[in-house]
Length: 124
Image 1 (cartoon, helix red, strand yellow):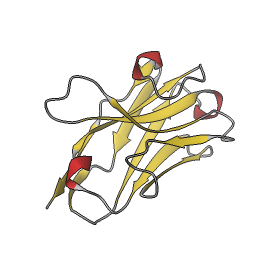
Image 2 (cartoon, one colour):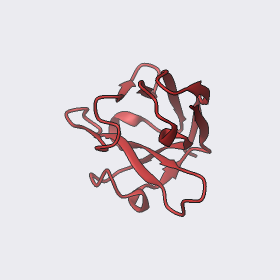
Image 3 (cartoon, one colour):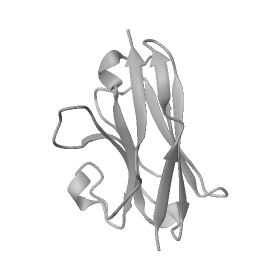
């Protein structure tokens, strides 16, 4: 059974940094596309943030986080990371990692497995 567990969320001031982790069991990130999504309060859909294909040859970032966020993976730890810097109030959301066998990285509906989410709150 695939299980994804996010950690690292919290409260941070605008301009600060935070790192999120997503650890997997029953699954190997190196064989699937992995993405980070977020869902802000009052929003009905999850917003694409970042993704990485299985072979790590391609990483993708939403325009709103380019230059501020990075996605990385440690295959030895079977963990995917989202490093966030220069955080803005509008980055406040519940952040989810997800994984799926296909290449379509930005459509949350294509993802098969999801973590429970970790809350990131950025204060002004």
